[in-house]
Amino acid sequence: MRIDTTKEHSELAEDFIKDDEKASWHDGALWWIRQKRDIQANKTPQWEELRQAASDIKSNVISNLQQYLIQFEENLTKNGVKVYWADSAEEHNEIVYSILKAKEIDKMVKSKSMLTEELNLNEYLQERGIEVINSDLGEYIQQIDNEPPSHVVLPCIHKRKEEIAELFHTHLGTEKGMSDPTLLTRAARKHLRNVFHSRRANLTGVNFAVAETGEYVVCTNEGNADMGAHLAEVQIASMGLEKIIPEKKHLGIFLRLLARSATGQPITIYSSHHKKPRPGHEMHLILVDCGRSRLLGLKDFRDSLKCIKCGACMNTCPVYRKSGGLSYHNTITGPIGAILAPNLDMKRQADLPFASTLCGSCSNVCPVKIDIHVQLYKWRQEIVKSGYVSNSKSVSMKAMTLTLSSPALYKATGKTGRWLLKHAPFAVNNKFNPWYKQREMPYGPKESFGEWYEKNGKKDGKE
Amino acid sequence: MPDITKFKVQYDDILKQYVDTFTEISGTVRIADDVAGLKALLKADFDFTKRVVTTLPELQDIAELVSKEQTAHSYDNVEVAVIQSGLAVAENGAVWLTEQDMGHRVIPYICQHLAVLVKAEDIVSTLHNAYEKIGVEDSYGFAGFIGGPSKTADIEQALVLGAHGPLTMTVIIMK
Image (cartoon, rainbow over all chains, first blue to last red):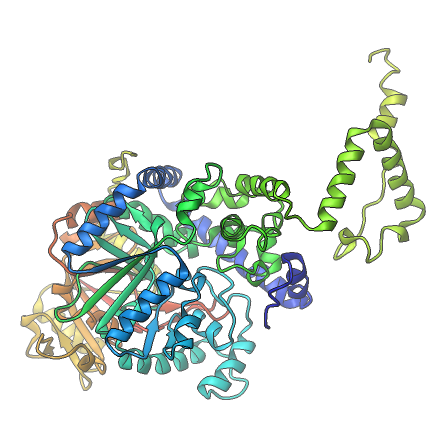
């Protein structure tokens, strides 16, 4: 399925739920992961205190970012790592290109990095004749299908195994219709082993960067980041400025929270600490701003920089589970994506903060305690103020303002609504009413509370 | 900044906790009493007709010693790698391996089967205890926690062991 980039979340969600069976499976699969997270959270002593500590450490990072970044850079340089600063996607991609060009490398293998997805690195390099292969299985599947990841941790969770079987048949020559997950994984393993073996350059993302020691930690389950990094002669890491943590001992807090929150594992299989290049090899690290320092200046929204990309908010979100990640038309999807995206492009992403019921489940599972649902609510206000809401939304909001500010109109509207639901349900049960889609309209009550009170409330002689 | 010393939990039976956790994450635990026992156990568990490498000099009569002289790529056909870790974590089953323990950085990732030797007294309760032991002045250029065989669930959340790294991981505890 290609994504129409002009459509809004609600329209893309509508496309997603057309396949009822698949949408229900998606909903259930993510809820299962949420339950696995709960099991781990419940059996880890002091879980809530751990979340608070992680949140507090990240608050400290946000307040002292400049100091930690400088310290980190100094230590990296001491360790023999070359450091770069990139303000924009263009700058970042140019740096990667120049590193590769200097070594005359035209093929690179990449492990999971949501950042380079955000920066469109693959496209940039491909246009300049450099082939990039994503080696995380889910990301590899998304790449051969020419689609972005739909989830930060589970890139192709929106695909059924039969769809993957079809892709592998075309790209890897597996037997047609063979959809066994183990055999499909084996086919990818064999293919990507050759890729790791033959690539001279590797790029990874960064989960945590320790200011105190200048090392960075990459977490994976598949082992692809390590296969890539330790076989390549040029190792590149790209990280957003916010990935810094002050001290090495803080890794204890974050590594205990990350995998438990993400997939319900006690720790990711691999937590690799990269510090110095292998003798005779190169290590490069690119620090990327790309809107992050702007976010730092927005008091109501800066806490979103605490995110450790575990995906717990997606797994728990009733809207995400029902609408699929690709309906968010943003690299980072789900609730956290909906609060990060408007900072990058408020006009294009204006619909995302509205793709929520504001139930608050996301904030309750967030390992660094970001007040996601509060920020969603605040972004809505910013977006309305800036005039970026759709016409239908702004007209209905104006009508609502008018109705709620006039008691007479309020009463009349209520009465009409109740009358319609009772005597002429066809007037609301039709495709012109967006609330009717996928739902039955409720039965209208006989009378409003106002009417009931008028009759009963005054009986006792009390006002 | 929060006080994180309050998180140091001590399990009553650290060894049992380690064995339970590592088994839960699809790892295999074996217990050996001495080097002879270790060798017998390795011979029973793995296919020695294929390439078996180790960083432990006491095993060089049954396995090839990992050599710095060889390139990383030359280890692509390794069936089993036997290495030793000086630190394991009971709460999550992970072992800590520095590049000195690995011989070559790629060894524990490129082999088909990974066997790691751990002394019972080197197992600590939580990651907090582990980082306290690791310290900040450690001289490694690369190190990592490894907690189980490589895995993926990217296809319909079906768990598959052996994504890109080892298909199995065995921890052999020396009492």
